[in-house]
Length: 166
Image 1: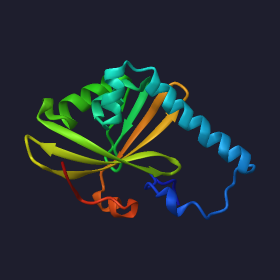
Image 2 (image 1 turned 90 degrees about the horizontal axis):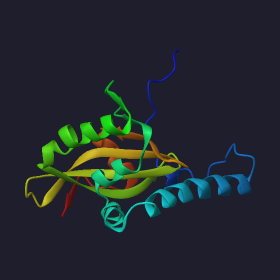
Image 3 (image 1 turned 45 degrees about the horizontal axis):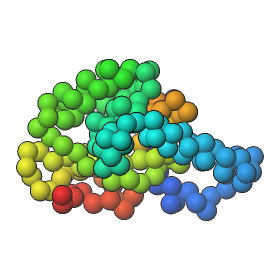
Image 4 (image 1 turned 120 degrees about the horizontal axis):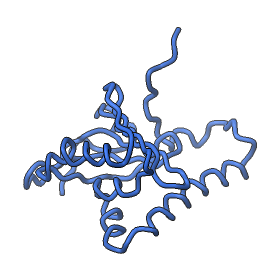
């Protein structure tokens, strides 16, 4: 049996009672704190306007937090983009449709990482349609990987709806 091509995201709330392979509670705490602090440090390094945009969960602001060699992956599609410029180009052209689509991101956690339910709004629609689950890998330098799981059936596992009113 070969290696899996990808693993589905798993809600953190379902991991809370499981034994951990980490050396102990202190190591787990330090790991979680370092990831959280790296993300906060990345946010704090942004100018005030960009920080507000990120707090509002804007996809464009997230691109600004990417490391220079960041990856965008979209399982099960074989498409991958590496580098801030390529990821930003994909987001502007395809995901945001040249400015005709906007997104709202609803925070959650998956695989012990920050994650967001993604909802796309075309034009002036008041209802956003599910566009999958985005899981971020955050390092000391910023966001190193954005994995966009396109399977909307995952959203209920995270307590997220299929549609979202603006």
